[in-house]
Image (cartoon, rainbow, N blue to C red):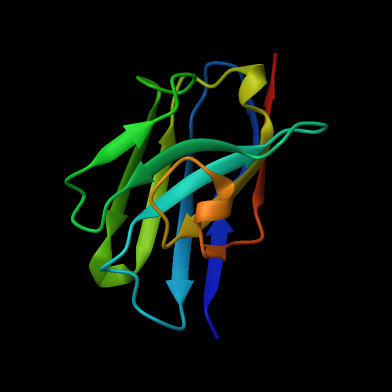
Length: 121
């Protein structure tokens, strides 16, 4: 059974940092892209970042570019999202996704359950 388990969410003040992790199990994901999405209350799930299997191609949403960094460790079947200079508008449930290629939610095959990130003023 394929599982993606996110961790590292929490409450942080504006300007602070958090590091999210997503551990994959049930199969190896070293040959597929992995990504992060987020969903704020009352809003649709939106693309945050994607990283190719080799880490050679990385893309970010404009809203997080320069503040967030996606990375992966294929030996550990884990993808990370380092979030710096956090803003209240970054508050959302953050989801890890695997086996996709675009910013469209429907293009991704596997999803985690999400981890809450709350940024206070």
